[in-house]
Amino acid sequence: MNIRKFCRLGYLTVASLFWASCTESNPQFPTSLDPASNTSSDVSSSGEELSSSAEESSPSSSSSEDPVMSSAEIESSSEASSSSDVASSSSAQSSSGSVQYVLARDPSVTCSKSVTFMQDCPKASPSYSCVDLQTFLSKDTTISEKILTSWEEKLESCGVVRENAPVYGVVSPVCPYRTVNYLKCSDGKNYDLFKEENGVAYTTESEYYETHSSAAESSSSVAASSSSVPEDLVKNCPKSEFVLFADILAEVQSKLYERYVKSIEENTALSDSVKSYLETLLDRDNKTLKGNFSPYFPGSDQNVESTSLKWDSEEWFNGYIAKTESCADGTPVTTKRYQQKYAAIYDECLDIISKKINDIIENESKAAE
Figure 1 (cartoon, rainbow, N blue to C red):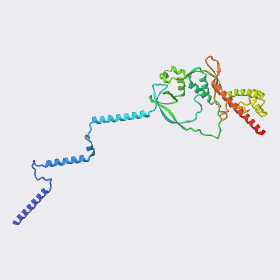
Figure 2: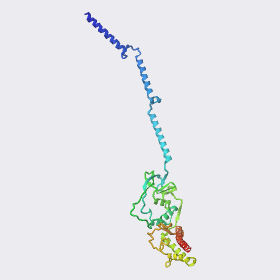
Figure 3: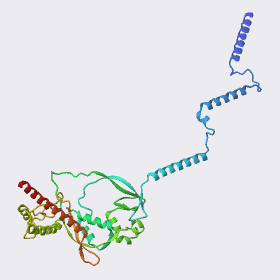
């Protein structure tokens, strides 16, 4: 019995010592449950240190005094940013924007010029035919002087005479790309740009011509823009008797015939060789030079509508020139353009013949030596 009691007491003693040691080594088991103890104070202090540590490790928290913005502040900031962007965009557009034009057909529409690329293929015919241009110039009208001059130039090169060209087999036409201006307008449409003057844009050639004529003054759409009314309006004297290069040359040939017949008869200093050369040029029966393209092609009759002197004459043209015009009193007079072209062709033909005569005289001098 004594042994059993001793064992029990030994077990109890060991157990009590064990529990006592566990309680002292583990802080999770408080030694006192007294409400007045400072356990809660210790936990609060620990929590403040964690918060402080977290703030120190977060740069966004430490760099902003008020990291949280109200919805009103966010909206205000967004509007300010948007206004700044619009102002910047407007400034850039103002510094690099294109010039504004108004349409001649409708001055209430504004347009800006833009650029695209297009293949520049040769056209089969001009925009106005030779007949069209003759009709325009035959009318009694008031028109822009620039347009009147343009019509006369176009008629002079309208292509009635076929140009001679070397033939080396079939050659495909080459159509290089070129930059083309067009209009982007406030009515939401794009238009071709034929010409612009003084801030007014014309979309077609006919529109430009119509605007620069007396008829434009009665057009309400054009009259709405004072800048679209041309200042160089002139009276067109109706033109008539439209002639080809060969027709002017025929009159030049008659004048040269008179000149050289007289020279042969009166200039005793002419050598026989020079006289012989001049006789080869003269058609005494018809009192002109031999060949309808002499002295360019002496003695050769060729088709005036298919023979080109493009490489033989600086005065060559493949269209028409108006020979006469009727002005205020209705009396036909020779046009200034015809007089100028006649004088230029005459001087060119005279130069060709004179060079040939000089060559003959120079060869005679060398032979005499």
